[in-house]
Length: 230
Ligand code: CA
Image 1 (cartoon, rainbow, N blue to C red):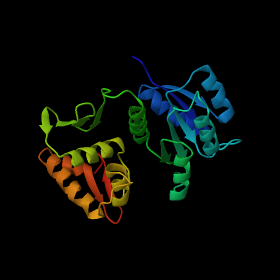
Image 2 (spheres, protein in one colour):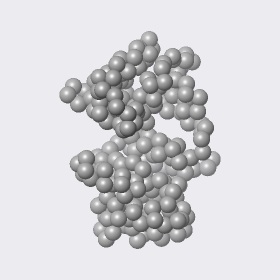
Image 3 (cartoon, rainbow, N blue to C red):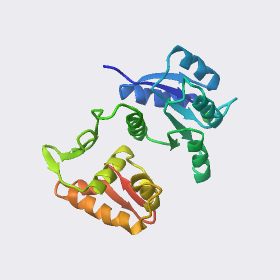
Image 4 (cartoon, protein in one colour):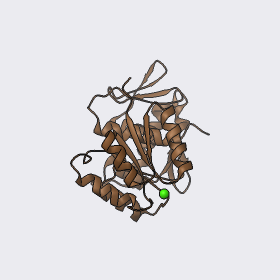
């Protein structure tokens, strides 16, 4: 098996070790660095497939380091997921502008992190990669765009499929209607927020027959969440 190589750059040792442990369990080849200087040494030894980069690092900050990596020919295409303890919208925008491909706000579950890593690696990887997202007995095949419950194929429209794909890649996290519009419909599209509710309803209907509609949960006053927990 050709394991993907992930470099974790994080100065807080307990977090770094927790993440390293979770990723090794998920089958990744993991290396650790406590700051940008150590990360550069690791990179010179072997270029990772993806970097998890903490925002607040001693010395060069995660953001400045991400900017540097994007200027360097060797690391320009290296996917970066920023790890941040801050939740302010402005900060995450700044993080993404620095060249990060995605960000995660601490604390996060290892499961969610693995799903995000898969999603980012898929974007950068060769098309048609054989990948399947799973939740309980529900599976979504990214290559064929097929959704199945056990042996049964589930019928749904293209928007419901994209919504489900987004949810399955980002489980256990609440998204507002506006965020779902940005992430699933695209930020340049003008659609009313009510549209999200319509497609959520259709998605639940498509999943209902097999009881998987319960995975698409309404969080009152906040939005929607995909969760295998009740
Ligand atoms: Ca830190």
